[in-house]
Length: 77
Length: 367
Picture 1 (cartoon, one colour):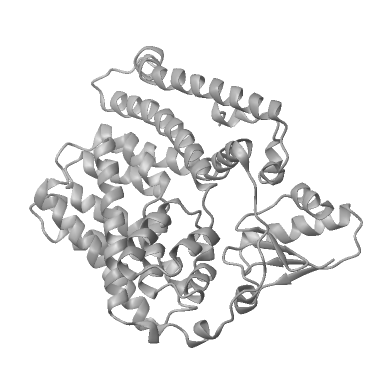
Picture 2: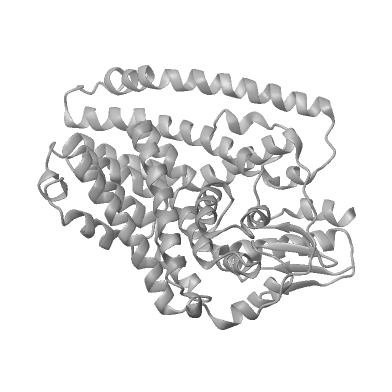
């Protein structure tokens, strides 16, 4: 599994990163949360509203901050 | 601040905004309960709204024993009446707008705008700018995303003007404090400025002033997971918007109303008529010049506007001030500098400011 958090470094993006890391830990997954901060890279991945969460290259959330619980729900499915 | 609508989703713990909206399968009984809670909240809201005037007067003149004609009495009564009224209106409208916005995403808006002609595109972009969720922090990725699928520059700029300028908090506060006519005026002229300035900028063929790498960036390959919301999900989105927006702006609203209340009670009528009234033509450009570098959210600026208007400033001047504070802001310009070169930024700010100026003069002349 590949988990990426996309954001240009705004406050909301940092919260999403932290929540995602919490969720990964709580589920005991052995994956690193990758942060994507380069604007061009974000565009290449097809995201227009930040922060965004990608799992295996699929956009699972864009333009909003998910809570750790919401991320856990997402990762389980 | 406890509000009836906030209580409409007892199932969603306050820590989990967003969590609930992600759930896809919802039992019908749960939707039923949510609807019931929503109906009860609406009844509670209406009762509370109807009780504001009698309660505020009772509190100001009976309980506190202030004389209705005194400066202090006027100010306190104004605050006690306006603060709950504006907050209640804010909760209701933000909730409704949150539900409406759950139908729109930046991706869907982009799909609608892609392949539209310029004139039609400008109108659509301005309208969608009002209802699409937008935060100035994602102005740049949004700009890139639009340009990438071939949406004309002018159409993209129409969206970027309308999105911050015509916002729901501004409309609610205008409606609550000045009535529906001023709110409608703001909506219509704000849209007109967004449409016209985007159209003019498109005609000017300024594409060469977009940073070159923008057009070189590749089209995205990721596929979106569609969100299926349903009624339950949309109601939760509305409640989420209330927590987000009202939770953030209520101190501003109260502070602004307090300032407005002070002015209402203590500043003599007509004091500002001399230099912010209709006869002073230069007051409109002055208001724009002061407003553009200023940055505040709608909630902070409107009570100030109310105070100015109440003491003799002309409506056109005041509208121009408000539009330039909310619509054009230094932080957004700095963010857009990443993708736009200075001549284009200057043209963007210049033309939008000119539009605001014309609206200001028009209203001072007509009303």
